Image (cartoon, rainbow, N blue to C red; front, side):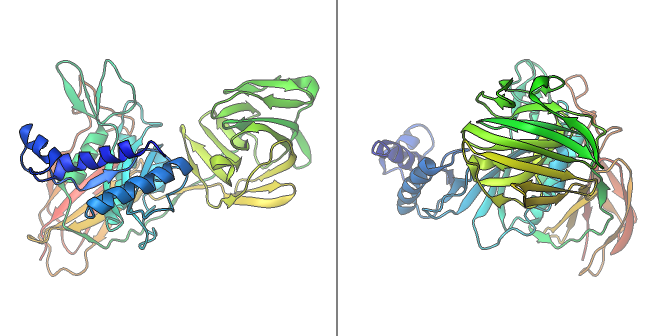
Length: 487
């Protein structure tokens, strides 16, 4: 902290270069460099994916310095490890990289967001699992999520897909919005989702309500696993029973027999299975993916490190599972998380809690098709419904103030066409002809390439049955934009 003044001054100088009058030192340099007019910089983020006490101290220092000189600036805070509480927070930067299902399930994330707290900048988001090199399924997951961003734009001030560009011959990240080589370029389906949302944005968000049957997928069951996250731990007395029958029981003589190592330094030692390495997501898996309705019991002891235990169940494969995370998030919380197609999301619930080093804990997980109940030292600490629920249709509506034109953006994430009944309230008349732009393809897995840059691209057309109440079929796996002329 005693060396921070140099960096505080650097931030102040950067803003002066962007916005200062030409009479200032840095404003004069901007003019000398060919841009005498101020850039009208409005937003500054303090850090990126930072968190913890050290960040909070520096956030406070930089926030107060910038606000005192530039009170109109919008300053953005990081939320890693918790939003700073030692200084005001205007806007928080939230990042999401996950599976299509995660984004579909979180389309309503901001519907119930606290309206009196900080605003939100979704600074980075993208479907990065189960999306090929950037396919239609991933794009529609993002589109469903974006309906919620626009619908709640009183809270979500800004949002930006990440990352933007990639050279196909030197990709460091997958997927990216726009791909190129030395002579050709193409946009992924996600690019066209971003383009359609940007080009079809009204001035006023209208209230919208979707009535549709929720799709429910019951838990498939599966094997079990042990894990750690930046922690060393050991496990013993591992047993799986179902209706009085023992499905699996471990003893020291078995060693690692039958276990599949996902990652980590695992060994059988001193009557326990030990993970003694560093690093995140160290897992050991065993069992049958057809196991259902069972109880997993075991003992666990933390040997060292930052967090606690990961106890897996309903393991279908390395990418699809559920785990009880004990002492996660820097040894501050217990929660259930579900892995799906390479991404993971927290289930409902969660509670404060920590795991002590050197102490043995008794853990029991009771799994059924409907729910899971988790016990720590015979106390129920977590329970959750294991069914995955999602809405097939997601909608946001807006209006252009000058023309009165209404814009409906509708996403159908299901594999079947959806016949809808659309009712518009508060309008006297809707013209029968309306522009309809549709992004879809034959398969949800379809992608664009340098050779087929427009395989998945928007197609414009016209419908002739629009009105205050009309029917319209949304194609399977599609984003549809209707622009309605209303009075």
